[in-house]
Image 1 (cartoon, rainbow, N blue to C red):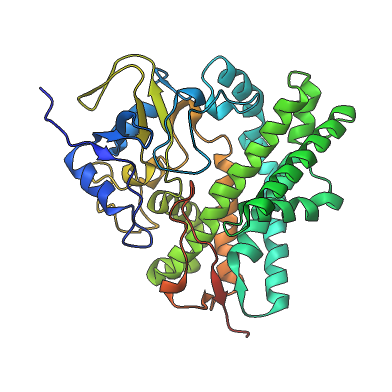
Image 2 (spheres, rainbow, N blue to C red; image 1 turned 90 degrees about the vertical axis):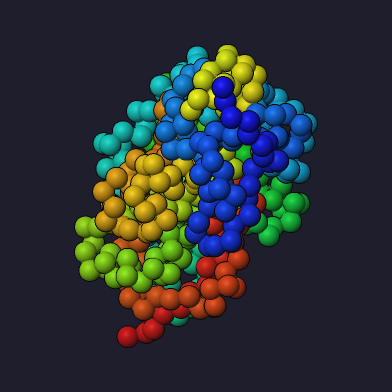
Length: 403
């Protein structure tokens, strides 16, 4: 007989510290890896906090990703009423066979060989923006002047945005993810980017190029609407996850000088540092969600058909059942790569290796270029993105000494 569990009223989001998950998530995890949760629209489903249970849900095809079946775990003005089906090309919000079709077409674009081909471009882009910071002199918002434009330009390389159009692309991208932009400006940026990507798709349809959109267009298996949606999805994922990780990871390293000193002393630790930062920070904080297509037992609890479950990646990545001393940031941790920050199972992030490449290159390069890099404001003045899908900083004011 299952012990009665108190129903959680929505997803906990209040953090008492900069880099740790909400306290309530940790308390729930200590009770059970799966607890009932009441969603803002009145639906009663489940919140999953245990590492093993999260992996079980995300790898089980009986849990659907279809958007029209989901319930959103927080109150949000953009999530009013029941969601409709995913647009053509929005494969993360689909099940097989639609998801399988898109995934098959895209998997070849993210192979180790393709990512190795992009690595020199990432190195060049990182160095160009470090050059610009150095030329300007001490004092910068690292999020606006380094992490955001670096990820934007890497996406340009991936999609095949012509050099002449990259400033326009980057400017609209920056406005779209600026949390302080007005709704009108954000809407105009989204509309402009959608038109931009649609025009780019049409050009590559007419004259295919050797880049992701060009190669996909040449297959003849995707129409313009599908290609445009895929392009925008890659843009949002790149900015959301990688951009947040680069800025928040820099902040975390600055707040852990011993770990930063170890990374500076041994650049070969960049790979393990990247995995530990992904685990420790877990920037995806509002999901993902899945809905049971049939009755399924998870961690000793029965999830009935039609119930939505929200998995907490930040909680799972701090599960003491999986990680020894999970709240300690340790860039030499040997099992950090078992984290679920990039998902798990059939919906695991397609661009995960590109995200890793950017982090492995950017962190050592940044601290090598500016050994005295430090915050330019008191820690408490760094504003955090508490209610966004990707946790991070609004801005990261930094400075450094000139040799």
